[in-house]
Length: 191
Image 1: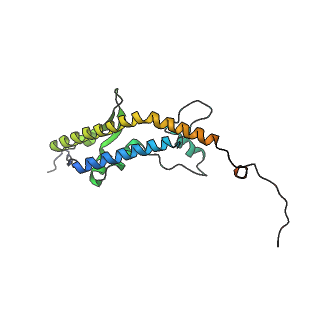
Image 2 (image 1 turned 45 degrees about the vertical axis):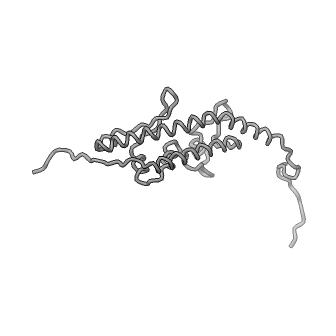
Image 3 (image 1 turned 60 degrees about the horizontal axis):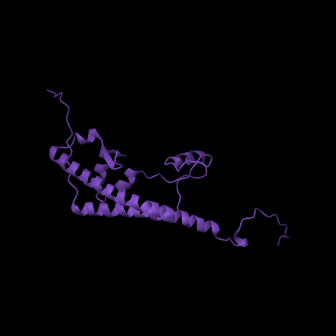
């Protein structure tokens, strides 16, 4: 006899250890500090359309890849999920979060929230659901606390970046280092 009931896959989730939480917090914080350092040092990676007065857009790298595919291309663009996963050290947890997180969103209070795939969540057994929910809340809290600090420090970093660019514009470039076009010189060849 064949049973026509569908076999429901049950997944188990083990909660993050305190050490994993601490490592995640440190890694995510380091990533935010790296971004602030890039802003302070006038690093610009997102091109913008010069014909319009737009701020850089996150998909600009795709437009450039399409236009210049035969010559060069940008590295794969890291989205917030890539950044998040890169801060998780444990391979099993990284795999679980990769499978379970649909995307990230920002709520009305400008707080980052995880959107979890329902198809994954319903396969968790009850205790695992509890641990998973707790860990997601902890990670949202960590990310938002670091982002709040980031947002406080960003205007100063932007100001320092503008100052750096204005200093670069004022630097006198030695005549020998300036590009003055191709010179045609006829010289005698040596044999």
